[in-house]
Length: 307
Length: 326
Image 1: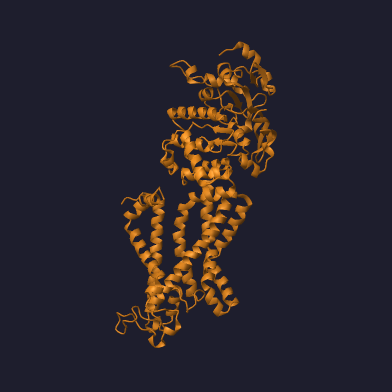
Image 2: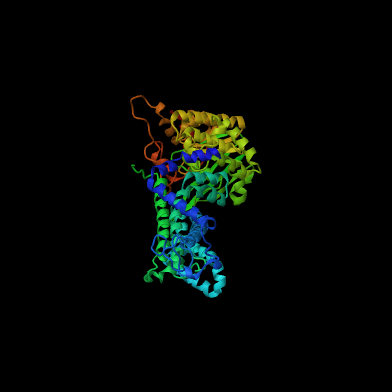
């Protein structure tokens, strides 16, 4: 185990990380967001889910550095009197959970379908790849809006708010599997011509072993690269859906629903309800994308950046 | 009874407009512990014959005639499950390029243990012990440490040794080696071939060595099969074939070796090149390149005839044998 850690610490990957300031700063900010978001129940000054602690008299208090700000509410409060800081911490946690879980689901579907299509080929491949083409010709948001609208109509508002996270994960996860499937299939087509695959067949391994144990590890670098982009995309999709009122309910806001909830107050001067969660969202996505850029360069042996 | 008997094997590739016959009427056999060489130029059908034995013809190739008997069982009719049990377990294969045959992202250990676990009910620890033992047999220094290595951390020769160790893991009764030393430099080549020869002798493993290198064949094998354009053209004990080849093609091959020529002169060569599968000439496939060809050769495919201990697919085998022009 120690040897594995040492090997990782001395790898080109870590060397490249140590030389790339953008990557390090992005990683630091991202790590800070993740740590803060996941320790929200401990560090948040208020519990935004606990309706009893919310006082409507505290509504729309500006951030504390403004004239009318109060020290109790560092980033001010929203229209219902919830502390913005706490709500953003909890909201970021929800956004990250949905983003990561949706991507895990995309990976699961996409990897399985892409591996099988690429390795087996023939009709199986045609079927899944045409399915992917059809799905890619519809926009992710359109699919998600239709699906979520049907869910919302089918369940009561109460039941929906409990299931919203799962629904969002399923919808976003399902909507983007073709990205993975296509990437994996392309890599598999290149890999399966290589002699180690022949050798594996000669050794007598079955198709599942060859696909998952031999070919899959060789396709990891494109996987890692699209995963970072996909996490960012999934978080944006979730924010967009929530902004459209189809995502997280106002009682359990994600970053998107927070931005939405402040939107109607923006012209009455309460800009912070929308602006602060927006900045958090932008910073989060930017960091993930910058890291993704770096991963792509670091894992591509054809690019050697002169630094 | 021979351990492996290939009888009258035919392989065809149905293409869009025609059916290409990659192998026609190929027969040879291998006894337990025997070392057989299969020789021929590129495109003669050597590798296809090997892949056919373990039932891994690439599409759309298929066996259209003959049988492959391994311990008396016909392999051509076996289902996938039964075939996987033989492949890599009873019959192992070694490929040309050790850079390519090891999976680049898995450690040697993972790759070796996996092979054992695929064919035997064995614990990780026992499998590791066997792996270390086999690495030691192929003369890999400090095998315990090398297990943790990735393929790119080893040199080409070491990698081919690892590949040989993997082929030996399950104690197979036959190893098929498809040009095992071609990708290596000459000194390493000699080492690898000597290693294989010793291992085959000490483990009593049958070896089918596919190569175009007659020097290697004469060092390692006991019998040799010479192939040309999908057919066996000559077969017999290696020592006799390299000294007294009966088929004009084999003669051409041997004459083309550098040591047969005179210093300062051009090397001998067989004029022309191997016909492609869609343009195999009528009659004896070798006649356009053969110095002894006549109308009979152009008209019909000669039968295999016996000349002493050798078999030759040449209508004039007996005349040529007397002439003995080499």
